[in-house]
Image (cartoon, rainbow, N blue to C red; front, top):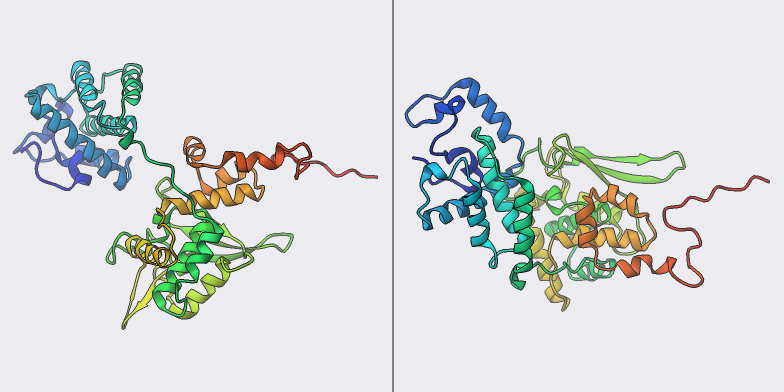
Length: 366
């Protein structure tokens, strides 16, 4: 069977092309797998994160649905021809965003590479069609800019949480750490109650206090594995003033929940057991608090965007925030919604900050 019924994340691997190259002939149905070729394929598959493979699996499904609807023979689907790829893009244009079309193409290309097939279509010709598709993309396919979290929004939510309760304490500690640490929400939560893996998810033992040479204190959180770094990355924050202080929220969480060193960082007491904090439960709790406060619930990604905006408005240099937030350049500029507010202090007739944000003025020695 060329395309067995499997989860999206497994389609790249399990869905076979009609006629693989001679070096991959072991994939022919009924023939045993060659151990060496299997190791090569395993290594290739590791090039893509699980979430990426799942997204590419969706693109691969869309491709084969298109081929089925057009009665395109199996032998013409891979290696893909320029004519088939152009027809695929044209079929998607007008009903999908350019970004979705590009992801679908990347999925088909990844499928080719994983199974050792050549990918001949030129990038220049493909990009030309995608730019054209962008011009006719439906308005509904364009995501609205996310309304970011703010300090005021966070403190308002706090007033509708009971920080003496285990779940509320964990949620608020996670929220303030994500905000002031400029973290991706998925780095501080787990996908499901059974998904916690101490080798991949952050634990109490991954936290340490750091003091620099000037005596300034920070709390550093090492995330074992992230979306872009298999060896992990660090996020960090320092004590803040007011109700959004992450230090007070974190200390309260430790007192209320007492997670052990190898448990999830934001594990909380639930009856007689301890549960890791899932993304779904975290967002549901915040949504409840927002509705009680008469506020519109926000998306999880808006926490990292709001953090970046908050620090920029305080005068933290753009390059420093790119590093702290671990932003790719394109995403960094795309998500920021208040460019004028960030630059405003430096555009005034009498600037509030006489020193531009990225310039260090040396001290004069008299």
